[in-house]
Image (cartoon, rainbow, N blue to C red; front, side, top):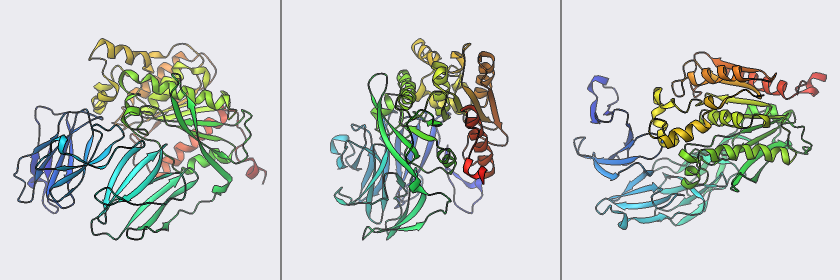
Length: 488
């Protein structure tokens, strides 16, 4: 249900704005337009697709909601209201998204006006600030931002220090400047002040870290998956790395829920890089890096494409000499934990170490626990049909463990995870230990007083990272970490 709460009032005085007693599991969320003339309500069955309603609140909260977008096949977000029209970011008729202007007096699709038409690259978002639009694109999984007028005409591209990720391009209509962040694999997350009129950026804050970014190189490569699809992957390592197959390598990915993985700085990853390792981030199908078509190519009955993409990334790293199967570790969390679990059951011989974190491991019953039912649009449901049961059973990590030589595995979860309940990891770890025919350790790490990961205090993060790197280095034969310091 959605309530209106006035700051300073008791919660008992909140006013009911919307409820649907016939659909108690429906997601509801929303907010007002910047001019406070409209309240916008979104309704979703789960994690993919939603409806949109609005009501005029200029004269109070009693007005009726008006349907703008119905059905759950598409995603349309109201960016702003201006002079009787909504500016809407939508994938309707545009898998890579477009920004349209919708006259509230004539809202039918034939009357929509394209402000920012669909392009080859994904239009990831549109922000408003200072009377301008800021269109954020993903170009091969890296951010490009363009400042525009409200008619869609280009003012300028926002300059960044390099290929990376940026965000924060929003604010109030009267603002003269904004603050955005920029980060990349070897560029710590920094804040820039941007003058909207001149387009000048100046560094506002940069963390002081004891490492030299010039010692490292990051690049993007493309490799072919099982069905011939080209998949991009970022690689980060020390300059002058020898491609002799001896480098400890961590391959990370997610591949689902329309989520995009883009370059970002990780202090923890420097531990790997400074010890001659390689960090690889693969942009698998199922993610959002290339729009809805890329997403849909890795969901429901096409989920196996995601695992094929990941396995092909591992093959590429070995073939090109970055690492070997004795030095390769794979890692992923949540849907990425499912990814790692599925790949280590399908091809255990390809990896030395596996880190499935807070993963969805029981694909036949996931929807029966906490908010698992919300993922049905992404995964399907074993109770819905034989066809869905069959494809879920075919890759469900828990149900595909069999006697084999599995890689050294650290399953991780937390006792208060109410997103992906710990039972997934408990069952998977127990069955993995029963199925392990080799000598590699198979353990489970259970964090106490923690959940799915967000909001974890720094102390817990440090402890977790220390365990992860120790486990990886030991099981890939790297026994002398930071040898230069040890000699001193």
